[in-house]
Length: 173
Image (cartoon, rainbow, N blue to C red):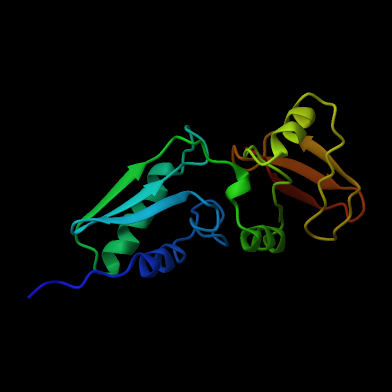
C-alpha cells in the first residue's frame, strides 16, 4: 500500500508553526527564511536561507524544522541551505512586522530586494538618510539609536525619547 504524502501546502502550514528561536513570536515562514518546499520522490525537501551567513541560530532553526516535521510523520527529509539570493528583510511578512511591533521590536523599515528599496538603503548606510524608527511601544518617531548592536546581531538598540523605553530595531538586510 502506497503512503499518502502530505501536500506542499500542508507542509507550509506546519512550518508556520515553527518559531524563530531568537524571536519566538514569529515563525520561520513569517521571516521568509523558508524559501521552498517540494517533494523529490518520497523525500521532502525544505530550502532555508539564513538571515545572514554567520547567523548563530541557523543550526538551531534547522533542528527545530526537522524535529517539527518528523513529529508530523515526515520520515524522509532533506534540508537545503540556500544562500543565493541572500535573505532580505523585504521577505518578512506584514503579519510578522505586526507581531514584532507587538513584541516590542521595531520591524525593519526597508531591505535590499530589487524593488526600488536598494537606493533608500544605500542612502541610509551612507548617512544621507533620515531614517525614522518608530517606537514599537508608543508609536513615537522621536527615537534615537543607542548602539548599532542589540540583543542579537540582527538588531540595533534604540531608545524612545517620548516614553523613555529602550527597544530593539530589526536591522535591514
